[in-house]
Image (cartoon, rainbow, N blue to C red; front, top):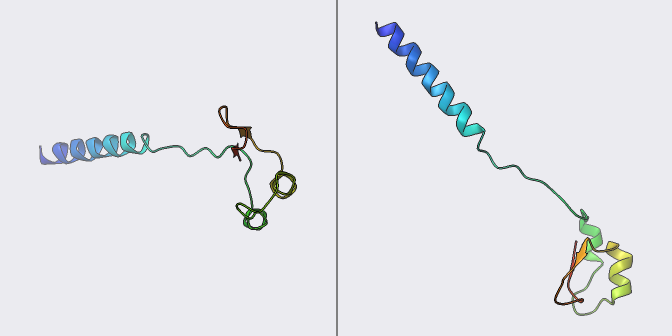
Length: 72
């Protein structure tokens, strides 16, 4: 009788652990994956658009409301 309850407990713990692992978040990297040296080439408030394009490439998307906001 005790053996059966131990087995049932272990099976229950296993099912709970597997169910919890299934809820782990998935990380999806999208867009332009920039390197540190590329970002270092861009100086905020100093770099021109052409310098940013040369250093980082084309933005993944641009803001709908402000064409000066680029997303990488």
